[in-house]
Image 1 (cartoon, rainbow, N blue to C red):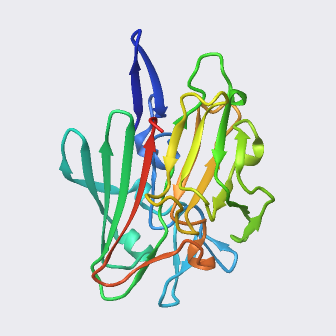
Image 2: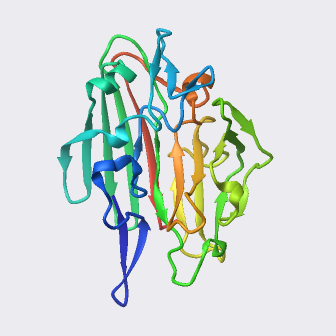
Length: 276
């Protein structure tokens, strides 16, 4: 996935970055687009052992980094000029990691200056199922010739800051929200939850051309709602601002873990806009 704006003077501005000549055979290694993180975001642990989680029936199961949907096969269910809805087709290996009967849909809705993505999970089985999904938007940065990250800033609402430790636990930091220069290394891999506002903005330090990410339709999202900031290296042509349903390893610490009862549906909707 990529998102580009056509500007006056026959110029383009990239909003969501996609690398040229991306190797789709190794999709998980492609740095670009918006990988879908389902059923859980980032790394899960069971008693310090990475890439495992304990299911409701107390069985310890494997779970790859960021879940399995980002490398999964989706079937297009509906499409028109402004939207597309896709359904995940889980493999047998996926079902071993997440042994539930469900339907997982991803719906994209496109407007001139905004993008809305909704995850829709329906429980088709007879036992409640857990999830804590997320997005991994690769935003193009910098988007001006001759500029670097030091020319941009991100504005994070009041929040609780943390990093994930080597055993999967969350280690608190002193950060409580505010404006941060996007060349600040402390942003990398930092987890922001208990958000006091649903909007996260980033753009030029003079306040122009902001990108706004809305984690929730509510003014103040649920306490577990999370935004993670990350990039690969100081000269990467992207910066990831990632809205998640909860912090990493939610099956173990329970923060931001959501449950769907049999026959019920749960949704997670995120909006990215250049208009606010």
